[in-house]
Each structure stands twice: as structure tokens, then as C-alpha cells.
Image (cartoon, rainbow, N blue to C red):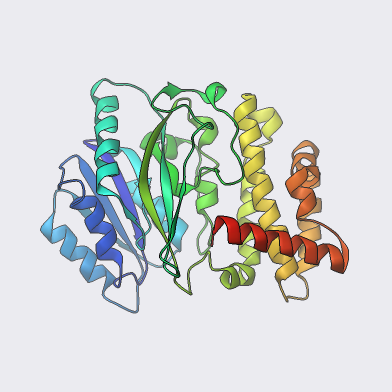
Length: 344
């Protein structure tokens, strides 16, 4: 591992916006030689994504590598980037997003210090910012009170995460060997796998560090974007597929001895199941509600304690009201939350 960090950039028909993403890392870091970028062209067909990626390699051959593969979806592109990573640390940046140069400089300063002094930090958490194209407004997700600032800690030192503070992919910078050794496997041709990426490695991270900078800029606004509500509803089967993988990754009460980490992971599962519940109620598919009921029963059979926490807590209750009136209440609560928090 001769680089401090590898940035994996999955690209699929990304020519329109990928240059901004890559530039924010390569040029935003001052073309630092200890930065490594792996651009994965995931079988692009409609534009010159691969040619643009190759141009970046030609300009910065010691920094940028390009991998072309048959189309396998976002998850497979991330796994390919991990496979080719040369950095001690690894971070995913989607091709329509970007990073802030000043915050990137601070992150690199800390990572270089960890590497130079052989300080073992498995996970570095930074803030991310929703950038909404529709109204030009932004919203920052930060982790004050949930994580101690500027201190290496373990899971026993974390605090309470509220519903807006779950550590999604955009916040996470893992030690590369953790990702390679934790059994992470992101399925092909499946959206929303970033939730698996932000969940499965956590019990393998023994130390973490919260750097309070607004690093990742998460663009919201393309009609075909996976977080667009209509797109999410049409892909409820994939939400369920991802949630199933997360559920089956651990019997949390047996496999995760640290109570605060276990509580956090149960919360993440609850959020995923709540999204599945709400989107199923919004769906016009005739089998959507039956599939949801079957999935909840599958969860119950797999682990009754995990199921009870997810289904019968406040969030699980409010997103699973029964009957036509109950469904309208559930959907109304979701829309109110979406308007306030602007998460899609």
C-alpha cells in the first residue's frame, strides 16, 4: 500500500459530470502523489465515459488508474475499486458528486499522520452535504454529540445518533484492509447497496475518528437518480433485497457484543425496514403489500429480538399503520419528514 488513500469512482454513462468529480479530488488535493484514484467504467454505452477516464490517466498516470468492466452495477464497480486500491484508506465518491478541497486537505493531513505514526484507525467519519439542484439549497449531515470530535475512540465512546445522522457511504473513509477482510460483497445490478457498504464493515472497525469537516458534496436533482422518490418506489424490490442482506449479515445480539454499536446497527436496520414499508404502501404494484408482509415475517423468523426492536419501536410503529387510513397517515408522516429533511 504505497498511497495514503484510494478514491474509488464508479462511472456509468457519466461523461456529462464526471470531470468535476475527478478534478475535485486530483486537483483539489494539489495533485498529491500519495492520493490514488481508481475510475471504474462500468460498461458505459451511451457516451465517452471510458475515453474521459483515460484522459485523466494520461494526464496523471501516477495518480489515476482506469478499470473497464462489463456492466455489473454500482456495487460491483465499488468492489472492483477496492480490489485495485493502493491506498491505506479507501473512500467512494460517486461520479455525480464531488469533494470540498479545503476539507480534503484536512482529511489528508490526518490520514498522513495516522500512517506516518502507525496509528491504527479503522474508520474516519466526515460530514456530507446534500446539494439540491431544484432550489440551490444545501443541508449538512454532521455528527456532533453522536461522535467525539477529533479523538480516536472505540464504539463504547459513541453517543446517540438521531434519525438524520446515520453514517451513510458519503461519510465513511475505511481502512482498506478492513473492507477486504470483513466479507463485504455488494451484489450486482442492485441499487442502494451503499447501505450494505455502510453497515457490514462496522463490527470489524475497532477504532474510529470523527473529523468535523464538510467533505462530501452529494448532488440531488437528476430525474433518473436512484434516490428520486418515483424511482425508489419502482425499485422497492431492490430496497427489500438490500435490507435482506443487511439483516442476514449478523444476529446482532449474538455477533456484536458492543451495546452502543449494536443499538446503532439496529437503528439503521429499522430505518431500512421503514423505507421498505413506506415505499410499499406508495407502490401501485398489486403484490407490494403482500411482499412487504412476507418480508417482515421473514425478518421475524430470522431473529425475533432484532425484529421486535425494528417493528415495534416508535419508527417501526409509525411507518406500519394498518388499513387505508393508517396507510395515509404513514405516507403523510413520510412526506412531512421528506419536506423537513430533504433527503431525496
